[in-house]
Amino acid sequence: MSTQLDGAAAAGREARILARVRDVADWPRPGVGFKDINPLLADPVAFAEVVDAFAAIAATAGAEAVAGIEARGFVLAAPAAARAGLGFWPVRKAGKLPGRTLRRDYDLEYGRSAVEVDPELVHPGSRVLLVDDVLATGGTAAAAAGLLAEAGAEVVGVAVLLELTFLPGRAALSGHEVTALARS
Ligand SMILES: O=P(O)(O)OC[C@H]1O[C@H](OP(=O)(O)OP(=O)(O)O)[C@H](O)[C@@H]1O
Ligand SMILES: Nc1ncnc2[nH]cnc12
Image (cartoon, rainbow, N blue to C red; front, top):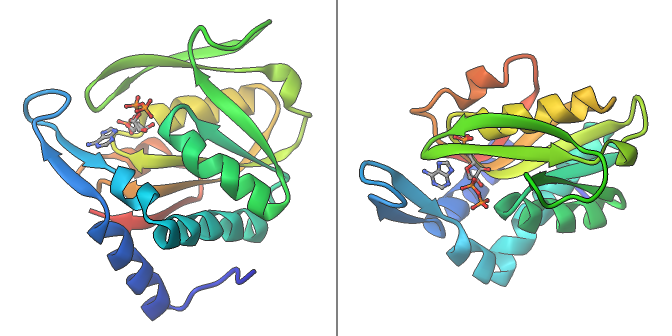
């Protein structure tokens, strides 16, 4: 599995991703430009390319697990974990995990939500790569990364399919290594 892409290859991949993300105006609220990744997921070649890319990022970071954020993050993180030969840790929306959980509430681009982690999944000091589809305000990823750290993991990177560069997601994740496969 290649762990590095030269600039031209990364640019080609970014163009293939952007060509398969659909812009939906004023959804789910007026003023929001929603990035629909479903056309990309429906394309088997593009889907495999991004899963391979996340797996390579996990390998390069020396991750021992891949965490994904429900729901769209699961679709990318779980196959990437399997591809990298690693386990998958779910960061779930509140109220879905059994047993004792750690919880954080946060704001995102179009609302407010909460995520939870099962602390028993996390071995102290485990190196984990956090994967999600879209980085917008960064509220979701920052909450998820904070939970993983609170549970004892070392978050060795945050990797997203698409970064919305007009929003301050990267700043919200200061202190973390952030990789975006595409930017818009
Ligand atoms: O950077 P932020 O402003 O926090 O936004 C990014 C988050 O918003 C979306 O999740 P959403 O809560 O819509 O959930 P879904 O994956 O269940 O559709 C997306 O999947 C990210 O997790
Ligand atoms: N504009 C957007 N499109 C898709 N997912 C998002 N999550 C937060 N903002 C988003």
